[in-house]
Image (cartoon, rainbow, N blue to C red; front, side, top):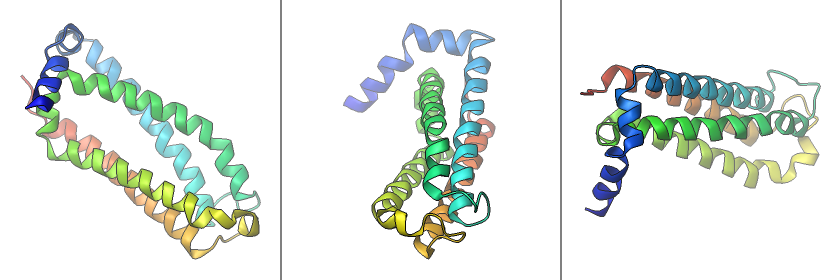
Length: 166
């Protein structure tokens, strides 16, 4: 019951009312969210394609990853902020939407994939980072990452088509 009260607190707030009732505010927030997700997925795709040995093969892996990582994290923070604003506008309905729940789950799995990559595959990065084709574990992490982020985007689109709002 405590979670429901917490969700209701935000959903019943003046901020949530403004987002729900203003003809421009929700589309503006949603646009920021879409652009930030594009930046997140685009920059991750750059790193993943390098891990797969399909792009930037003449550049060391760490150089590619370190080149896009700051933009990835800034865009991710903006995506979380804008997504949170959209969420509070109809939190109960979002939580009842299977695509929304799946999207959050897939983002967590993508984060775990990244963490496992850094702990397992990247521990010996200096030995293989200049190779045109990284080791299998790095390629698997890159391929899985691409699949997960495509699924995140697909679920995000389906949310918009399946939400039943007031």
